[in-house]
Image 1 (cartoon, rainbow over the protein chains, first blue to last red):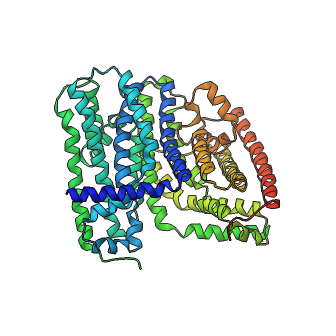
Image 2 (tube, chains in turn brown, cyan):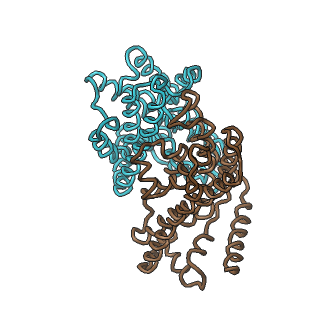
Image 3 (tube, rainbow over the protein chains, first blue to last red):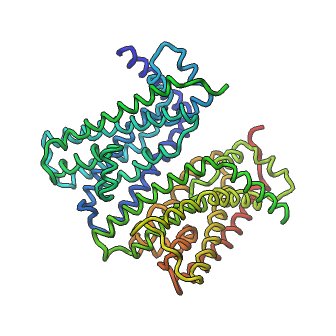
Length: 262
Length: 267
């Protein structure tokens, strides 16, 4: 385990070093990442210039929600980008090389990509979080702080699971499925607003199928003091269980894998 | 002229061959549309009196936008073209017995139209079958529909003309990534891809509506539902014509300059 962490650290440092060889294109990538989610923010900002609330949430509450959700997403994307681009690893036959090495497969794929450029988006998420934190009138006690930590951690694990499942599907289809983007990038866009806002059918989907609601909507209500049940605080931990079936799918895919590419 | 039409046909046929990608895109766009409508509906339910268009108009805006995404999307600026301008491969294209401006224009047009041709049918079909507030209504009246078609053609031409102008400007930079980033996010923001222009505050909207970006998807998508009608629609369509002329002229001038002093970097 310690050995694995050390190896992963090594992978990351190599990646960062190589990125720093092209500082200008790195800066541009940072800016690009920032701009895409900044546009989403602007859309929300101007909606609230016109409307005072949506689904009972005010502007600063939505900013807080978006900030936390975006932090979780960005953490996951930063680490799991290797899964997001996994189809090219399979198609080029690089996965064969990964399999013959005496190390864990997941570890190696994770190590193949580390996207430091997501720092641009992370910065935006943190700024939004701080703004939301100070303006949404929450009295910060220990359970609330823990709730935020759980939301970010649980959300990151949930997105990690989605990226992992998306990669696992590549074993069956050899190409990346655009449908997976709905659950990653689409969720990032629409996670701006608490999922309860979208109506009860979508909330149900986001509770029982892909549990975004458990890392966002339910604990958010507790955080904002709209509801007091303590289970809401721990809901994100339940959502993290989502990673188990995703890993199962990955294992099935690996067992079924018959090499591709040349 | 004939060589450009056959070039168009060639690129169009190329675009049509990506069927699997199109099916995947249809499902993505469908999900995207549902979510977007759910969002607008939430705002509508909260404060219907502040909603700047009818809910029905917003719904048809979303569905048409998703169905014809390829026609107007900012990210359809081709990385391949930028790359060939950067690495000098564009010089091969320039050796061909075609003018560079119309060639790039036709190429972009063919790509957008072919991609949209594969996608719009299923999205519109399913959208029109959806129940209640989510469904896409049939167009009201033949004259409005004709105006919609005309505005759509103009909107696509303006989008392509703008994109080709950006390609032209790229000739004067060594690395196009930064320019591409700025242009795509500005386009998304100002042309109503993020939220339709009527949702912006009034003073801001007045400025945005005269920019070339507003002459792209903003006009046809709002004409369809009648959100933009009468004199305002006529003004918008005239503005589309003006911007089309300006952008094409600017694009040709820039491209001609670029051709005259082009230095090929790389071998």
